[in-house]
Length: 243
Image (tube, rainbow, N blue to C red; front, side, top):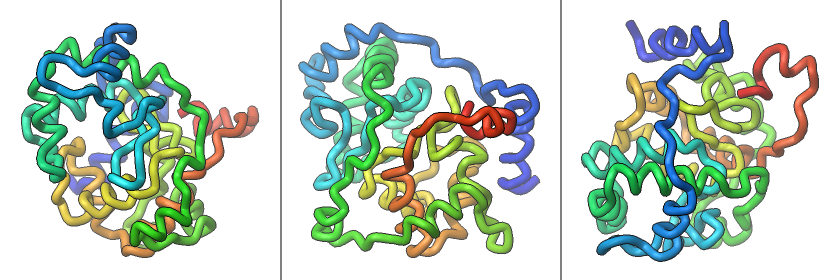
C-alpha cells in the first residue's frame, strides 16, 4: 500500500463519522504549563525565550507559533524530540530541553500553549521575511494547492488533513494556518528532503517529495495569513470548517 493510500484509509473514519484518527490528548494542567513556559523547569530554560511570551514564534530565528496549536500535536513533538525521532538542528536545543522535562511537563506545556489565542493570523512581516533571504510566493497559487492540490503531480489538497485554511484536525493533524512563514518553509523543505521523518506512515514525506520550491513558498504565503472566518452551513456539511 502506498503512503497516499494509507493516508486515504487513515482518514476514512474521519470523513465518514467526523471522528479523530488517533487517540485523544491525555490532558494536562495549563497553569503548571504556564509556569514552565514562562520560568522554565530544572535546567530547562523558559520556552518564551525562543517562542515569545505570547507563544507566537519568531521568523528571525525560525521558531514556530505554538499558541492555539493542537495539544496532542505539541505533546507528540516533545515526545519525539526527547527520543530523537525529531531533531532540532539549532544546537539540538529542543532535544535537550524535551529530555529535561517529565512526561507530565510535556502534557502541561501542551495544554497551556493550546489554551492561548488561536485566531490571530498574519503574524509574519513579509518584508522582514524577504530581508532574511526567503522568497515570497503567490498567495493565490498557495490557496489553490491548499484547497485542491495538484492530482497530476501527486499532491493532495492540504485541507484534507489540516482542515479549512489550515485549522488543524484534533487530535492528529496540526494547525498550519496562521503559522510563521519561515517555519512553514523550513519544515516543508525538511519533509521533502526526509531530514524530518516523524510523520505518521510517512504521509508528509510522501506529499512534500512532489513539492517544488515555488510550491513551498506559495503554500507558506497563503497559510501564514489564511483567514479564520466563520463557517457557512453549506461548508459544515462537508466538514471543511468543522475540521
